[in-house]
Structure formats: structure tokens, C-alpha cells
Length: 444
Ligand code: PMP
Image (cartoon, rainbow, N blue to C red):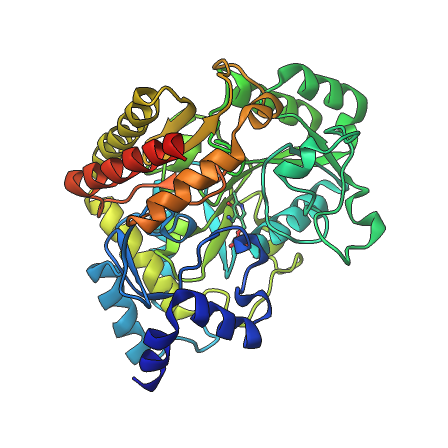
């Protein structure tokens, strides 16, 4: 309570300054650095809302970057996890819950027969890349512009905005962070996504040295972009023909765009899949898996994946509670589609009515919206889209909306996440706020 009094006195701004004295940058993930031009220091999160230390209430469409498909503090997940803490949440031994967690994943996700649990997406991806390199005896990993696969050494490259910098072509990879060894990306290739010719060209040139192709099957880290017709099938076919593995990073799409992830939605089976976010309802948990054959080196304990917290019983209980709930209520995906549509329509109308160009893309409850200076066609490349975005205008609308009680990420390339906890009334209230924020932009 003493802390609360201090927070009340300081407000968001003052509290954030104090936090920065003891937490470097004031945040525990560098990726959050651009999240709040107007600081928010959270006190409570419940349903589709967060409350800050000034008791401002915000309807949230960022939702912790995607895990909370049932909203914050969902009673079922919460009760299960609380119960698990009382029963002992980490022993470093197999637990009876592991069986149900494994069976739920292998039942729901088409390509997975065996999994291993990790504690973050980054970690699961790093392990999956090592497994693919070990199993194929090759080193090269092919990835795509704008896709994010965590910050481990051989895959962390300069992000989407860096792509626009002058003189930087998409095939020239640059390290994503200070301190990476210069050779870190020497075995990584990058091409534009959704471009079949670029894919064929790179396979013709380097196909037999490619260990794996890794992608988000619906790109969600540089606005939301769905694969063009036949693209995933083509990637599947060319990887198979060259003996390269196909890895779907379904950290965002898994249990989000469909009960069986993007692979079920589009009917394409990868060799390995990465799951996180919705998987654990907000607990730090990820999983990677594939066929028994693909997982064989790990099954024999020849390849390595390790971690004290990997598969801890609280995380596994969160997985079990979340996936049980999803399995019992498969209708939530229709509900999420309807809610997503309501948000998309509301945003489209709000921007159009004030004469603004906007780029809206959506798969179910995963969507992105970007204010534009000029219209772009539906087939626009990521570069064309980024070049047309009005980043400053978008940020100003976001700040006005935040002031009036609606939070979404100020970066127009970051996705929005709608949960089952967003009621029609919540969505409509948020749209009214955003409409007013756009009007404010015109008046400014
Ligand atoms: N892959 C994708 C598609 C992601 O969106 C993210 C995180 N946003 C990651 C990997 C990395 O996961 P984590 O932050 O848990 O390491």
C-alpha cells in the first residue's frame, strides 16, 4: 500500500521516471521502447481493460502483444494456475499434467506429433533452428523481410523500419542489435515474402545448402499480411524438393487465427511449428514440435534444448487450462471473427468518414490498421505500404485515443488483438473514441 500512495502522488509520468532509475530503460523488453509516447504505468488488467496508476481506464487492443485470447485475468486460467502454485510449480521432474498438455497440442495442431516446451518464443525458435541444422547437416536458414523470429544470434536482423533506410536492399542482412558477432548472419538469407519468383531464384541458387525456411505463415510483425494464393503450397513444395525443412513460426497465429493455427487455416503442414502467446494464456511458455521423425534427435537426447523453467508445472497448467477451454468452446473462433469484423468495419468507417486513407488487414481477431498519406493497392509490397504510411499522423491519433481511454500500439506496423472479453459495447465505445481522435487530428 505504501507503494500505491507513492504511485498515486507521482502519476504515470513521475512513476515511469522513478522506474527508469532502477530498471534500465524502464522496460524489460527493448521491443517495447516505442509502445507508449504517453507513459502508462499499469496497476490492474482485467477483461479487455487496463487501469493505470492514475486510475485511468483504457480499453486495450494490444493485449500484452497477443496471449490473452480470453482477456486479462481469465477466471479459468487464473484459478488453474493459482491452484498449481499451491501444488508446487517447479520440480524439474516430469509431471502428470505433461501428458494432457502434449495430447492437447498434438490433437489440435495438424503437423505436430511431438513437442518440447520452452519459456519464450525466442528460445523455442533458437532450438528449432539448431534442430533443423543438426538434422539436415546444412547451415543456411532462409527468412523473409518483416518477419520477426526473436533475438537469438543467427536470426536477429534489422527490423522493418531499417528496411527503408537508403542504400539497404532486402537481401543485405544487417545485425538487429549491438554486440552481435559480425558473422552471426553469414548463414542466414532473406528475401521478400509473398514473392514466388524470389523464392524460386534463391532455391535455384542456394537450395541444396538451405537447412530450413522460417516464416510467419500470416505475417503479423510488419502489419498483418496474408499469404497470396498458392504461396504456402509453393514454399512447401520447393523445400521438400530440396530437402530443406519448413518452419512455421506460429507464435502469434497459433490458436489465434484458427484452433489449429495458420497451418490448419491454409492446409499446409510445416516440418516444425513454434507456438507461444495464446498457448499459455500469458504465462511465459512456448513450444516447438513436429512429426516424430523431425523430433527424433531430441527424442534420443542427441540434440539439445535445455532450461530450468522449461515445462515448469505452472506454465504447463496454463497451457492445459487454455487449450481445454479452447477445445470445449471451438465456437470462439466464429465469435472472434465477428468481433474482429466489427473492429475492422468501425475503423474503416471512422477513417473514411473523415476523408483519410487507411490500410486495414485482418485475419479473424488479428488485424492491423495504418493511416496513410496516399492510398495503396491491395497488392502493395511491404516497402510500398511502409512508404505510404503517415507515421506521425497515426501516432497523434493514437495519443489522442489513449488520452480518451483506448490503447493500441502507436506503431502502425504492430498488430491489434481482439479477445473474447471485448464486448460489442466495448468495441463500439472504442470506435467512438477513435473517431473523435481522428477529428482532433483534422482540427490540429
Ligand atoms: N516470433 C513471433 C512471430 C513473434 O511475434 C515474437 C514476439 N512478438 C517472437 C517470435 C518472439 O517471442 P518472445 O518475445 O517470446 O521471445
